[in-house]
Image 1 (cartoon, chains in turn purple, orange):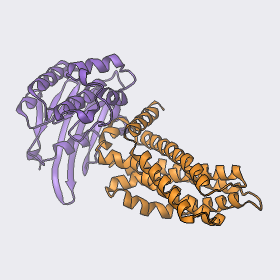
Image 2 (tube, helix red, strand yellow; image 1 turned 90 degrees about the vertical axis):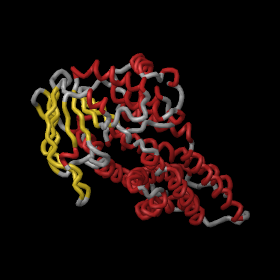
Image 3 (spheres, one colour; image 1 turned 135 degrees about the horizontal axis):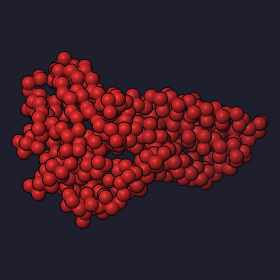
Image 4 (spheres, helix red, strand yellow; image 1 turned 180 degrees about the vertical axis):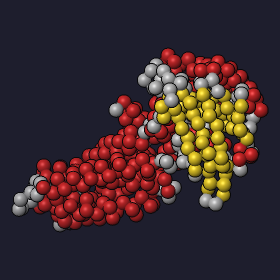
Length: 208
Length: 219
């Protein structure tokens, strides 16, 4: 699976909460090298759609299909294919950044790589500090490391620049530009700079 | 297996730094044991009353500590983070082991305290010990899955106690009966009832393992 080309397809995805329709008929197909944005006003369902794509939430109708070399992948294996982060993804406050990362990294990732990422995102000197003492910007940097460090084939970032300062944004954009040719990147955002990173995308306002 | 150990290690690390579940349970157990012995004022209770009080203390110690492991994930908004990296089965098994170890620690502290303050010396010591161990395992098995359900409702520990009691009634009933026999002696020690407690745990764990995915995730 790891050597084959991954694709992700959204087929007629709709989501309703009770009688309220959030979005409907969302269709797209993404292959390796594609970078895709999801935008729309507050409450339009960007985060919900991201979670549906990640298999964390159920859609009201339609299907999400992951394929590897043309073979459909079982949903229980999605977690091994994507790196995901968003405002609702909170690491453990009582653990340090290093401990949180050791808790989530795959067996391929060693301590050296963890330290490299902490250094890259400016958290190395704070690595032994419990996360509860981090600022919101530092927590966001840690979220991004969690999504990136396992080097998954799909990267899903929900509001990746929330609370980031300009240096943090530069690090993120530089990292995405380095890896985007080898991955599928999906970003849910309303930031124009984030949208510019992507080749195409959808506005959920047009699907409401 | 590696993921179960990693999650277990994380839970113990957080508990060691936080110590809320342990402290609450130990404080409750210590205070109630002392209160009961002071209230008795040196007058010995009958073995049945001693057994009932002992299991009531264990039951409420479990209520104050064991739901915490799941409720904390929801309250501190770590549930999604955990779900992104661990399968429901890995989460369930690690939380079950954590609760069993935690409750056996609590029982290990409460039991000698209770025996000392109420001046009890069980006649069938092995039966008494096996009852405490198998009863504790049964309580931990039930409270783990109920803790997961309660954590998703957002109602906290009050609902947990209310729904735990009827489910744990067969366990408490059997454990009280076995403890009474082990304290007063006489007749034949009924080891087969230990098997009931272990079988009860087995059934609850199997059913919980199969249903946990539907409790924990929205899929």
